[in-house]
Image (cartoon, rainbow, N blue to C red; front, side, top):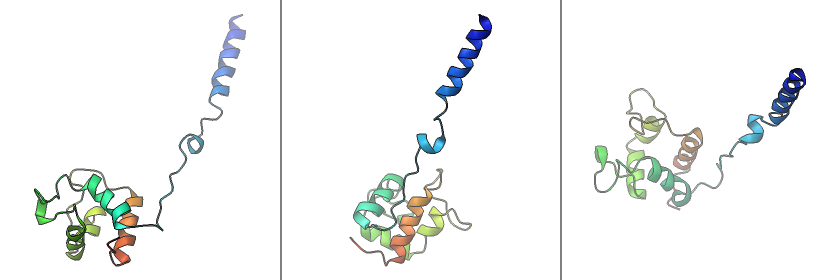
Length: 119
């Protein structure tokens, strides 16, 4: 009887995990690199990742990233891409945090390379 119970338990456990494949449970979220706008893509990234320190009230390093003009000024100063890519010679941003997801870095890079439209 113990042997039958053990076999049943093993079968139950293995069948229960049959569909536990990472790609099924956690499908990849696509990175939109075609519809990038300042208002819908770039501003929310900076709003969630940067404006805690770089805002109009206390613009750390004199960079206010809470609005279009402030972001463009920081890009034109040559600081954004080096900082978010954690390149040598730049202060890695977010400070004391993990690097931004590669999708967000790609979106920012595409927006910059497109001439930083205020859309």
